Length: 369
Ligand code: 9MR
Image 1 (tube, rainbow, N blue to C red):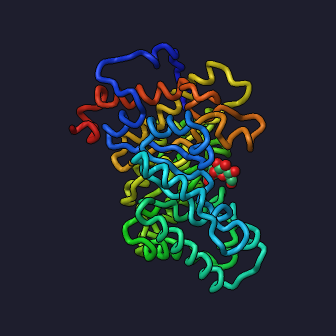
Image 2: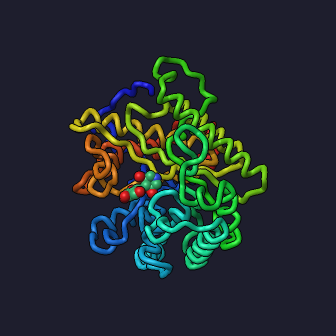
């Protein structure tokens, strides 16, 4: 990771001429969709939460509502309430919805995972699920994470009920089933820890560390998997790079740009699909400023790549983030504080978006108009 120079909060907040005052307006000018992972209960019960989602974002992703365990909690009877509520909120507020996630090795309800099924039975179940859900939301959900995290940390395929029951053919098949269910939806493969690609030489000690090599291996394994799928005619429109990052494990701007270019060279659209930047506790003002710079760098990398179409923050605020729930020593990963005040990261992203065309008018297709 490069050492970032923390700037002051005051300079981030400084007003300028011709500036947009919401993330959504500033991003849309550059052809970028900005989204956030949401929760249906918060949208209906927390009016400040709902207002920020409506005003600052152009797109929403159900954080948990459309996963298999939420949709099919007990048996084959669907429970669509939460996803329906999210889709209705999007419709009322003219937001787009990205679906997350049709197939994953986690959050599979017990009644499915506890039962051994033949390849045929498991394929039928999964195919029906994909078709039922995509058909129900055909008008409202224009893009989907069809498959989430199928590659293991060391390369190879991640252990999964679907891999065990169906075999590796489940991977191309889920995309084919998705295409049959909806001929126009954009179909994404979504993966974590792939922001670093081997295209970037290892220039310093940290780049040759075990962790660095592991991330490179996973990014490369994902690249090869997608290349093979495409060569075999599997319908796949895009890749989501999750980017759950920490200052210590953040790819440099150069690494990230090259990784995005590498995936784009496969002819895929790119989403930064689940961005958050976790901080070690105790969180200080200095760490929040460093976090602001890291968020901005991810936005810069995406803006530099014409095929990078959308960035999504994973959770609206620090009170709605999965990070402290899972990691005892990490916190404050989003761009709004727990009391829903804007954090330095918010201002820094807005500034990056607003200033993009001052800095890149000559070399960025996003500034053509
Ligand atoms: O943010 C989600 C959290 O609320 C859930 O408890 C968790 C359960 O697996 O999933 C989290 O979201 C994950 C996403 O669906 C896929 N990529 C990793 C995300 C963070 O774990």
